Image (cartoon, rainbow, N blue to C red; front, top):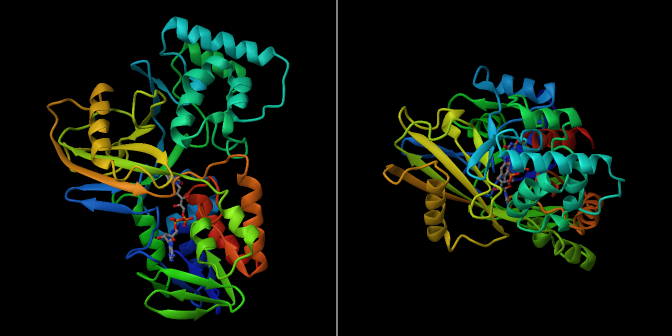
Amino acid sequence: MSAQRRDEGLVILGAGLAGLSAAYHAGPGARIFEAEARAGGACVTDREGPYSFDRAGHLLHLRTREVQRLIQKLLPGRFQVLARDARVHLMDTEVRYPFQANTFGLLPEVKGECVRRYLEAAVSEKKQPRNFREWTQAAFGKSISRFFFEPYNHKLWTISPSKLSLEWMKSYVPQPDCSRVIRGAFADIPEGGGYNAKFWYPQTGGIGILGQALSASISRLRLNARAVSVAPRRRTVDILGLGRIAWQRLISTLPLPVLVAILEQPPRRILEAAKQLHANSVIVVNLGVIRSRPNKTHWLYFPEAEYSFYRVGFPSNYGRMAPRGRSVLSAEVAVKAGTGWEGRKKLAGRVRRDLIKAGLLEKKDIIEKEYLQYLPYAYVIYDKNHSAARKLILDYLTSQGITSIGRWGGWEYSAMEDAILAGKQAVIRK
Ligand SMILES: Cc1cc2nc3c(=O)[nH]c(=O)nc-3n(C[C@H](O)[C@H](O)[C@H](O)COP(=O)(O)OP(=O)(O)OC[C@H]3O[C@@H](n4cnc5c(N)ncnc54)[C@H](O)[C@@H]3O)c2cc1C
């Protein structure tokens, strides 16, 4: 990967990883405009006193040599590769993730039921599952589905798993074979598989150093430069404070509904399709605590409804995010799109109580810092309208000379590596 090209006439909106990667690979001609005062988008690290907080757990699960090489080139020696230690907190105990392959630690009658229903599903006649709930029941049996997949996914996506389609889950839900499921019920087996079995993470500085390194290697980046209107016919974009900018080709990484909202005179069918795009929001309640290692894992999943969060991360267990003797706990709470921020004080109080209930904090612990983050667009919801609405809008944009990419620009469940690859592909494939 190299930044040798010169791409005049190319304008990029948004300097998250997708936009930064597009600018990097396009070369010095490309201009990139970012609304915020810093680059990185969702891949930033906030520094608060002695603590560092990513915007929710951000770990690099790298599949491609291409992106591994790029990161080594940009940040030589700064990343370590770690084997995931993630668990599921259920019935007052912790079992290894992925749950379907690790029911070992559960009460004998519970894991017995999980295995029995798993085998029942394995030998039963296969019907085409119509939604994610039916799929988990068919793939793992009704008990594994009921104890983990249904409550966890309901909490994460904020809608019933019976309303979720199957398009997103292939790369994200590990599907261990039958022998692994059975062995995992009778023995504690550390290696659990899945897309995130290993991850890359900086030894120091938090995940934000990646966005920073990319932005430092591109030349025509304007910060505090919000796009407020895009005119495909005129081929211009209006940037707040900078005026009208002409483009021959536009790459947008703005959330798709935001881009549609600032398009000049889009067809009615595009406006209607944009109404069918749904995402949730996430509030991260970060705590800086005077205590070392409140939990030995990297993160815990919480399927049970009695806990407000779906996941709690321990970033100071995988990066230097707090000084010695202190720790960072990051509790992620999913809410319906655009909601929840007004009630954040109450929510933070509930999160603290839930952390005590889960044994991750004690009443006497000194919380030195409480730092809340709001991610307005978090997980794109794969409901029955997602695929058609997304395609209609993306095809229309392509016909207008606009390529919309990234997790929210492409309106998909994707990760940092995908954003980097999408940025490169967008400038290579013309
Ligand atoms: C809760 C959560 C956890 C995640 N965990 C992981 C993980 O563990 N591993 C992983 O690989 N990925 C993870 N991700 C995904 C990862 O954050 C994204 O894939 C990646 O950061 C997307 O980059 P992007 O450039 O597409 O979008 P963004 O980072 O959102 O970039 C878009 C940019 O556009 C800017 N912008 C918006 N509007 C305008 C405007 N009008 N004008 C100009 N600029 C504008 C924004 O400020 C932003 O900088 C997670 C995401 C979430 C929400």
